Amino acid sequence: YGCTRSNKATESKTTRERWVKLCKIVDAKDNPGTGRTIDSTYNELFAAYTHPHRHYHNLDHISDGLGLIDKVWHIAEHPDILEMAWWWHDFVYQIPLRQKPVNNKLESGVYAFKVLSELSVPTLFCVKVIARIMPTLHTYIPDYIDERVMVDMDLVSLAAPPAVFDTNSENIRREYFASVEEYRIGRVNFFRKFINGRPSIYLTKYFHERYEVQAQKNIRDYLAKNGGING
Image (cartoon, rainbow, N blue to C red; front, side):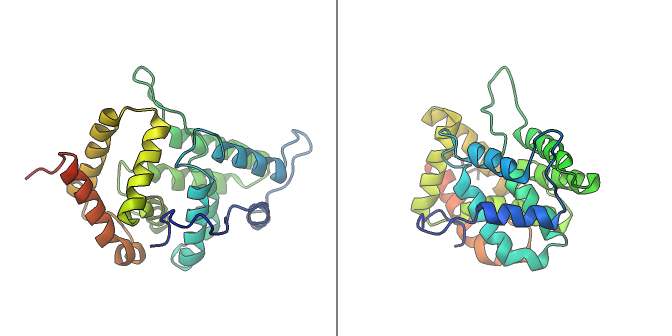
């Protein structure tokens, strides 16, 4: 199943060359006035996704999604915007504190807007990048096809083989510095929404046909083991 993190030997898609190519497509340009360059921006992205506390939302996660984009670009209306949004969607990853909630997706989108504007990318493109990032909050079901693709890409690891699914869950827990019990409660509540609050996990035909059955099984097995099945 595509993005399952089961094959670490797979060559990463997050190359500098790929980033530079995308920036050329969207007409980004180095900014001599501020010192912001396409190259330095790649360095910034790379540093964020390789930070030591990134156990799941890291460069592998970005590479997995880029690999999927190579397979689904034909169903997206604007694959260049989709890819740019994917590069940025987890750039900011602060751990929410009880007294200080954070919106990592919004902060990632706003920062992407700032950086891309600084690189002379057209404003409308920058706005659309934010619009593609926000559905990965997974708090609502978007209508637009490219946003549905974005959501499905972000959730594809739910269809990993069970052992990889468990490893991914533990890596996310480590990112949150949560106790096993705190994480279990949060994870159960999160998964209940996918079982009870939406018609399916995946929103596009491409992902639904390939990943829905295994993702449903993984989630239901998790809920059954962790006391989260109702009725």
